[in-house]
Length: 197
Image (cartoon, rainbow, N blue to C red; front, side, top):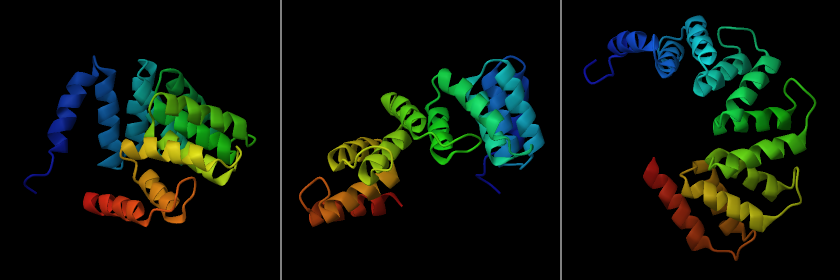
């Protein structure tokens, strides 16, 4: 169809670039994975990028093992790749590690480790991690229940455009959790969300 991105052409360019740029390998893998549903090919592209030291390739490789795309599910390998990418500053990898520790995927559940990874990701501005920290503060699953902290984390995450955090903020204002009940504020947030759809 007209106006659709020409993935075939893009692939030709990425293939040329991939000989020198690991970023291109990641892009190539992403097209293989999401457009062509060719998981084995995507896995290979991410592996090649990882060998070349590309952190995003390493993170994507972790996801392939986490979800069993082109390879059987292997939580141990997923965690290793996430840790490698996290140490190179990829905050999505830190989030994934947080979740793996939180849910006990491939290892004992370790809520303190989960909290540490979420905090590391939040420190470098991850909206998802800030949302998770808000949720943990609101529910008291790991930490003490602290509505003020929850509010702070949700607000920071919402400021970065995280929709789950916006919903959470609306809930906090609606029920007066950590703030005075404010139906108007709650409605404003819902309106903002509606405008984005």
